[in-house]
Amino acid sequence: MLLPILIGIAGIAVDMGNMYMTHTRLQAAVDAGALAGSLELPYDPDLSKGIVQQAVEDMVAANMDSAVVESVTAGTEVRSVIVKGTAEVNMILMSVLGLADSAVEAEASAGFNKLEVVFVVDNSGSMKGTPITMVKEASIALTDLLIPDGTTPDTKVGMVAFRGKVRLGEGVEGFEAGCHNADGSLNEGIHEDFMDDYWALSDYQRRYITLDTCSDLPETLPLSQDKGQIINSINTQTATGAWSGTVIPEGIKWARHILTPEAPYTQGGDKDDYRKIMIVLTDGDTEDGECGGSYRASYRPNNYWTNAYFGMGVDTAHCEDGGVLNADMITEAQTAKDEGIEIFAIRFGNSDNTDINLMKAIASSKEGTDDHYFDAPSVYDIPEIFKQIGKQLGWRLL
Image (cartoon, rainbow, N blue to C red; front, side, top):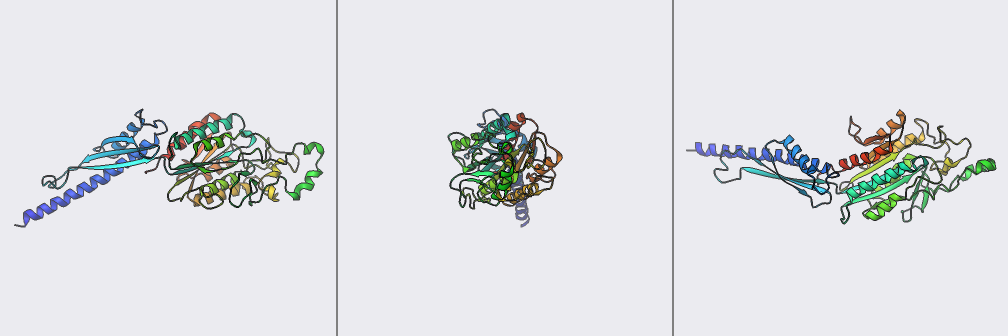
């Protein structure tokens, strides 16, 4: 008498197990499909070209060939996609008894929301002209993707333009407006300890030294959702004016300050809520004029002595391989990573292996890959690299 009951219980248990396993596989397939579709949003932002649809269908099929993609629609979040799918479940008893449907459903959304992005751009003189123009155009295109016109996504963008130092605007907690040294003190050009050396130079040599190497440098932009303000800030970059070298660790340090919610900048959100991104682009060594090359000055002091290290009275922080500036670059990058910040590193122009390895070291690439490092030998490689970064920023389930 109990045998039919026991068989029925066993059948229902098997049905429930099949339903659970099928739904788990379907959810994973739909998640993968949404992520794959979101990566194509830079090329099909309103889903009108079928590129996102095809990417979704291909990825869902690759993960579960029996799944059916019911719909691919724009998400409620800006620049996102919603994928719904179904799959049939092989039932023994439950469908016959009317206890369950013979299909399961799953839904996923992925896209570009909940991002904080800071562009960290080399504004030294070697970037002037076409290079800085291409960087600005690529930065604006990525901003367009992250913050479309007429919308207010939960995404923020900031900027740090650097040379031998970084220039702060008004309202930065604990800091005066102007350029600052590596220790946080206000940069006032050549440090007073070196002014006797400055006056000891000939009048001819002093003609080539600009004590004010700050006012031509664009101000940092705190995280903002105001697209107009962001684009205006990006466009202030010209890479012209007085030079002071290329001190990459200062750019990284101030971008970290912008991305973290603690003072001196407080616009950043919690790292558990936001994906925090730093995009670092440079075409030069960490450069203070003591390492040779075509930009070396043959007299001391010189414009390089107005940078963030010389400016605080330190004349031992040079750019030789393994020197203080390179070591600080690695340290600042690791500090940022420890704060939950991802670093995309772009090396523009011709570089030696030391420079390339430094940029690879600061990048947040997955182990065994260089997925966060990009090499741009030509200015015309820059837009495509920013597009590739844009695609990676879409890799987020909402």
